[in-house]
Length: 413
Image 1 (cartoon, rainbow, N blue to C red):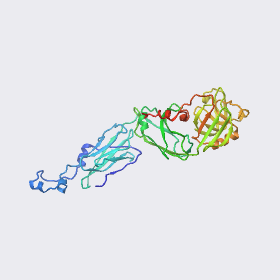
Image 2: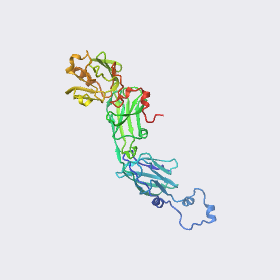
Image 3: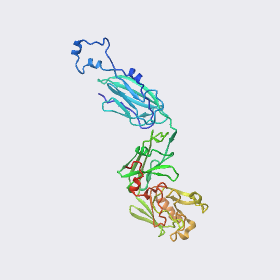
Image 4: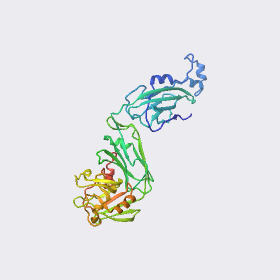
């Protein structure tokens, strides 16, 4: 018997159901005509598996859940198509844009179940056929249904967005436009695969912006050359009552050079280390005793060749406003940067006098800017600021031990 054909694709999920009554009529198998009464000799002559017995089989019927004409179906609810005799020949479920939903057939060939979800506010059409014991198509039917419209459609921001090469400290990060109440259900539908295989865990935090965020970080820094793929299979998932995702998301990136920036606050020096070898040590001026640079491990977030440094944006009132400062590299969201500091040349390599940033000469800052990449870890040592940076302040994930980080997963235990 030929294997039932199931067609579909992961994206654009929209479904329709088969009407039970219509299916019962349309999906009726061949039956014998004439009298219902069989003679004794007829019964004696009929052998199991013979064509005559097959002709007397119960007509095939197909049922679909949700039933035909149903509206307001909960998004993500599985669709099932069942043949009560014979087997399913083909099942196809598509939305109004002809985007298909995938599914699988049970071993007995009689039940098809969707494996991708319906999305909110969508109309779907189901078409199905049955086959008899000889593999002959007996009938076909079509059914339609619609899903509940979401009160709110949740969307996400991925970092990295997709593609590119990043440092060994770069986590996979998903930030949500709207609050996530069912964190466990969302996390169950997130998958990170790595080549080679690397141990890691999801952990939930609040981004500096106040939005919910979930990051996946490895136990230790990524091995150089690792390829990371995120599949966020969120279409049709409810993140809160009445709030649904309408699509899936995917991101892939590669890990580049094993580079770590070490900032030694008491020595007024930073060192760029690649593959365990110090490639350059640079004089710098870190935060003063009043505004000590944040200690611990951070991650480079972004770089700007020129940027205005304005104290009002980091909660320091009108302390300073420095337009068009060249070679700025961020390593917290709250305003801790590497940058050139031509106005502070006398203190570079001698004293820590900044408001928390790490200042260098223009020439060293340019070299540093061109050398480092987003995702490189920044390890600040010897700071008098012992308060741990929150994980959501930039990528402060590395402020925690791996055990502490794993405890932030919604699926722990």
